[in-house]
Image (cartoon, rainbow, N blue to C red; front, side, top):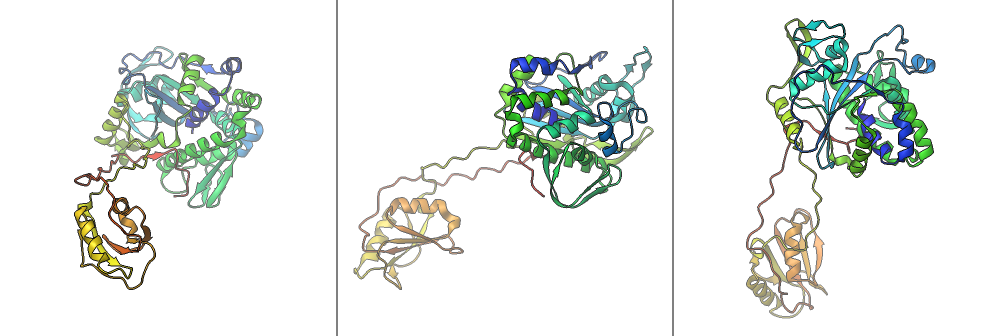
Length: 463
């Protein structure tokens, strides 16, 4: 759930003035989350940045009404905090691409040796990854993730229930499209299938639901990723972010419940926001760490999920090297240059006039220009006033070449005609125009695919 902080925060920070930002940052809680971590990986390639965002289930900051609506108990009855969600966000060195990776809370983790606040040394062990946070807080969680991924975490942001709900309400709520109805007794949510508008508390119920579909935490993470896309869409389309006065009050309310590392300064955030404000939704990639087993048991740990031994290391290596996890969308511009040579185009010439020998002349002219006659020139069934090309829309690039030879001809699409083009001559035909095509057609560009199950920030639909 906490990725909304970064995605919305990037938009917020690029709009808030320096004076306002001084007031905003004064309410952020800071913690030395890297304290005691003895061995750390090298930084990622170039100036790329890795954030670890953690959603804590602490009840602190929730009003009595919110506690009642969520039905999660009070701060006293649900003391302490657990990592409800852990997500690594990689920002490319050029600030034109972001990758959001969900780390399952039940991940079978290699927890390194650590020392608690009382100086007691705890041996390395295996456990579920959310237990690392419960035992040793952010420092042990960071050490565990860095140990397993060899990816260095540059900054840490932790958001609790209240912060999440406040951020959703700050943008006026979020529209979510669900394929099926959602009824989860544990998170106390009941949504019909289709489009639903969620306020902060309902959105919190939505991103926490994990019991209704039998997919547990894995299904919840996919819904969280879809929510992130919808949250970004809401944040960029609402007037809230364009009103600095209103914006400052809601940001202060949300960030009062945020914890960060001490090195995350206002200069870093404002610079990052400025660099990333043109980031498109299609360049926001979201995925879950590839898994090989969703019911793994070993060394006293049961019901864990196991990272794929081949795909997971490949994913983390791409993050370290600042390489996209999926093909980068390319802007396709239409080129005026012809791509299909005349020798690859089959034509059939018909005379649509009462001019004797016109079909034979045009057929010879087109053959001289390189086109292939697929049939003997003939007389059309009806007369035409203007030369006409009948074509199959599948072969539109070939049509461009034929149109270059007959620039004044009309075109008539006909599905399932095939590769043959029918040229029906009108009295306007005099000769073939000069044109230039490549000697051979360009080889088709291989379709790039990703070895990972990736969705983008543009995915907010029901599917």
